[in-house]
Image 1 (tube, each protein chain N blue to C red):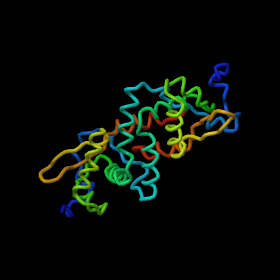
Image 2 (image 1 turned 45 degrees about the horizontal axis):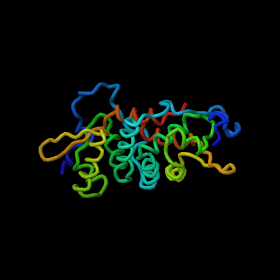
Image 3 (image 1 turned 30 degrees about the vertical axis):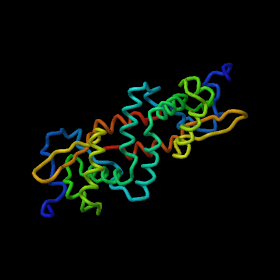
Image 4 (image 1 turned 90 degrees about the vertical axis):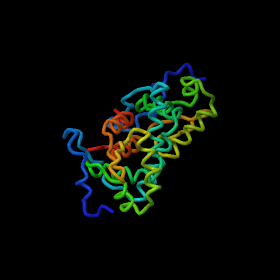
Length: 121
Length: 121
């Protein structure tokens, strides 16, 4: 073991500039936060789901009808529903039923939390 | 279909304040970007891996020895190696072999790209 050397002393040797010296702003994660964040990242780990999410978020405050997502992406309504359900369960979007169609909106606070975890200072 | 109604007209009705009105800064994703981003998010979809990453990033510019991660997290060296390999493959950390031990550092540009995708404006 290298217990004679403190962690900070194992630096790569200053090959990166100060502007890139960076630490996760949130510091070490406890188990509960790690579990919650990992579930949100899992919802983002599918390319079709990311593209659906980008379409929803691209509407700003507006919610987006599942019917429009089907048309924009050229995928079936059951496939849209399956992917959007994962994003809703992860807390990244909300779903509102209006008559025949579900409508989706982004949850800004959820995005802010993921950005905060990925923020290097 | 609702082709008589533009997407932006399906707004939820102004129940959210202007400061929360937001659009993904990157706009719609093409298939290649969606694939690449989804692979990075997949690497972040495991709680143990997130905690390992937080420990590495918590050292700033310094690289972290696999031996220290084993000790900090109380998990076996093969488990540390398995998880760190996924993070390296996703481009989120780099690995350098020094003698017996691998040392890991974060890749700030990869974090910046994920934050940019999650940035709502």
